[in-house]
Length: 169
Image (cartoon, helix red, strand yellow):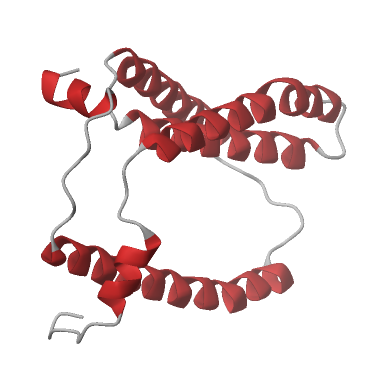
């Protein structure tokens, strides 16, 4: 880690964020929340439609490619998290969270696709004793790293929300 970052970690006080920065943070936050709101609302009717129209069984033609590809993606995510962690790079937060999400997805698909077969017990055991605990551990660690980051306070951004919005807001 560079000396500039080391000084901040050892108790040096970071400079107060500028009004322009706070305005951009507020605007980006609002736009992101608006986008996610529209997506969440739009996903509800799509999910209901799928629930009524998808067949309960389906013959898959690229089963091996799908699962091997997913596991390769999981290995890349884990390896990225390891490398970024050793390098003490802040992007390890994103990589760790992505790895946790992929582990949760892996557990879900392994178990749900094994229902009705003898493989369901092995899939459930791997989910309960390996994938989900590792995902939970990664999420816990990511939350700990996020709590160490310096963010504009809620009061500071709330003060910025009360100001007149510019044309980009």
